[in-house]
Length: 448
Image (cartoon, rainbow, N blue to C red):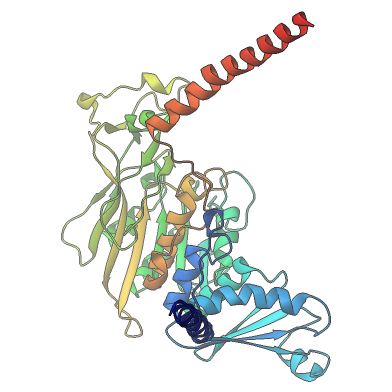
């Protein structure tokens, strides 16, 4: 009887092993135990894949000799794990040189990604960042043209000076956006293929012709990003502000709330809590805004104006002392007309487009352009917020709330108990342990 039980147990084990083997060939289960899930796709790449609602075809023009095909297949396996209708195939460029030349693929090591009748080329190095950028360009639906007004001391889209926007636009251009200069002294009006016009903090008065061209562009349904600065109302932009139904308030917005985050200059407005809008939905990163101008709405306009950037309770518009070397001495003087916060300094505007070719017109006015400048774009969520603003203005709502790009373990989160344990361990326990070892070694040597 016992021998029969043993044979039945053995038979059950064989059947169970066979069932597990059969199921493993039909169903795949993967678990990533690496730190920060580095063996899997980053959250932003997964979010981009979710915006692609149809099949994606990836063709690798790679030689069968060498390790490139295996490396690309390893990268693509992460994508196929998340999107089942993403396919990968390889073509030997030496066997089909005519097709390679026609597609503009030179040499070895390029991918061609196709989606919804559109295609993007991914040159080497073929990695997750470059591939996800190509997929995001496909999700955007084509290259977008962003024109930057130039000629009056504006921030340059490709500039490397501290006040310019070269670092930010370099990141944005990888996602399917192309920046072009727009000088109204050399061109008449805004070109028709322009998707967005940016007026980035002019330092000189705009000529009447430039203001008229911008006003005509807005009145005809064009999208606009206006990065204002304290004192912009004196640079001839008043007419543009009237068309948008906003007003740049005098003075510089100062806020003592930043002191809680070790920002001791009240002229730098720190924002971690945002009014609800599509731009800021789900956005939790802290952003820094130096030298901000507060904004106000003008009633009786056909624009829907929604504030999405707002200062704290301890803020006000300062008129005096903002240029001294001791910003901590800035005080609130309501008798001079200074306004107490919270005050808005970022407006998102939208309305039915006057152009029959568009359904909606959008504009954003922000009382600061430094936050995406080369100096400050790397602080907190500045770059991510700037990308959200550009995506919303271009009508790419599906891309607005993509997760912030960055290393998964760049932030160390420790509770107070954990901090106390580390402090006790390194400042008390470890020194006592070393003293004990030293005393023990000295005692043993004396006994010899």
